[in-house]
Amino acid sequence: MHYPRHRTARPPQRSSRGATSPLVFVLLITVPAVIAVAALRAR
Image (cartoon, rainbow, N blue to C red; front, side):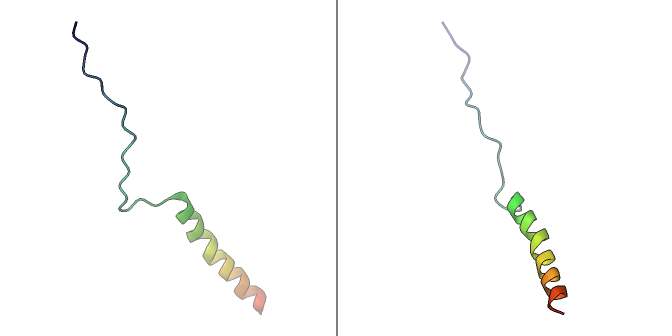
């Protein structure tokens, strides 16, 4: 009896180059906002 070749389920490939994690997006948005608020409150 001949079975079809078993294919292992591969996880989706992520290129480490150019892939930005959601944490990086959050930091890119919040850090300038915090700096701006701190600069405005210092006056």
